[in-house]
Image (cartoon, rainbow, N blue to C red; front, side, top):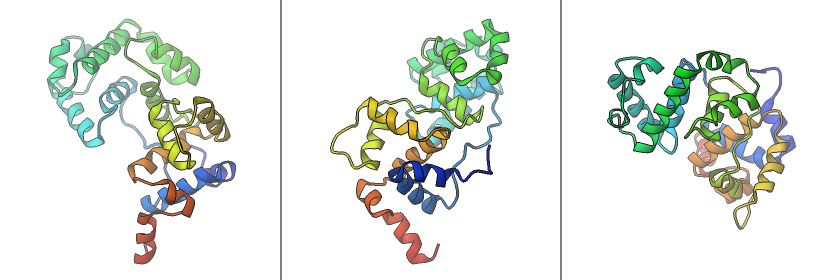
Amino acid sequence: MNDTVDIERYLSKKDPALGCAIRIVRAAKGERLRPPHSKDNVFQSLVRAIIYQRSSEASGSTVYSHLEKIAGGKLAPGKILSLSVSNIQKAGLAQSKATYILNLTHWFDANPKVAKKLPAMSDEQVIDTLTDIPGIGLWTVNVLLVFKLGRLDIAPPPDAIIRGIAQIVYGLKSLPSVDFIRQKTDLWRPYRSIATMYLYQATKLKITAADIRRGHSKIDEAGIRSGT
């Protein structure tokens, strides 16, 4: 992690609307956003990403813990290989996610040498390698790259979620195009991961386009009034 650069200041200069979102989030969170250190290994990180997708953090954590109990301890390919899709579902997962986890497990079991090299691969190599596994998409691999491997310049997939966030931040009347998203994310290089973290936090705080125009939110205002 490069702490010699003021990443928030850099991003704010490159993209003033993003800068407003960053200021609001920092006021609410009280600290800079950085990928937390993960104690999971690569396999565990990917399983966790599958489980957490479109789930709350609390719900995802509960399901992950249930899966560990079913598998008999810390998750590893050897432990999950003995489970069926229906066994994995008992952790609280849909059939599709259970299938994706089993697909991932079979790949790790069949490709141990390649799996071991993943942390040393380039971003593009990791993406190309893992998205060949059925059910493993770009979002899942991006989570690994940012939160396990600490890659700072991972672009968010220009899907409906990120386009919806961009519509709010940039005060647009309709969802922006994929090209618009790519143009904006190009401005954030080489810190696209950090910029994306702020955008996702902005949605969790329910920041509105009006908040961006004012440069602060109701949460921000409450903090100012209380002196925090």
